[in-house]
Length: 111
Ligand code: SF4
Ligand code: F3S
View: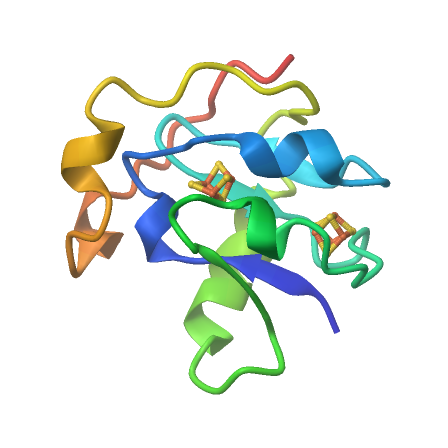
């Protein structure tokens, strides 16, 4: 089991989640974060920290596609452990539906 970052993180990237993770298993893309499924210890502390409610356990139905995205990009994007400013238009994008189409495959800066 692992926790998974889902679409409402895209273009928001609040990064409150990275500060609380005890095993530093978040990885940063240009406009999205992912969790490394093999490193996550399922502690659950990140889920309530996300203002966009974009983190869920993979035991919830329908998350297979997002689990795949988290697994794939956590192998190639840089690690992020320190909170940074949200994306410029985070408030505008929070809650917008079908954000998968905006997911950038480019890596973020990490820390
Ligand atoms: Fe990190 Fe715990 Fe969240 Fe997994 S559930 S990503 S270990 S804070
Ligand atoms: Fe994304 Fe929420 Fe973390 S918006 S960066 S999963 S706090």
